[in-house]
Length: 68
Image (cartoon, rainbow, N blue to C red; front, side, top):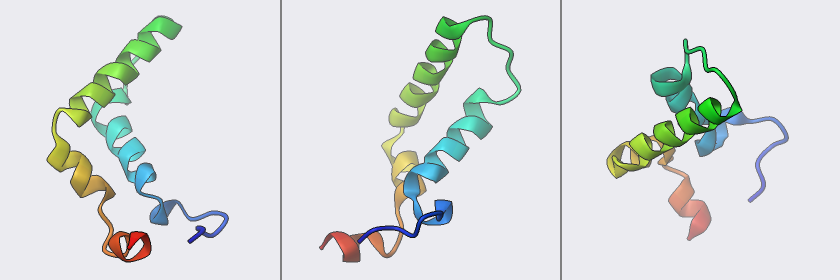
């Protein structure tokens, strides 16, 4: 089922990016591109280390119905 053209509230990955920005990536000054990539990798690894957090961010009641 396609999403409407602009509907970030319906896209689970938008909540993941918001979480990463708020918890790990905001209010930081990074020196160069490699530091940005490293900060993003560290944030992603911290999130994936807690699968229940990732699950809670991406679970929507209507998703199982669409995928079934």
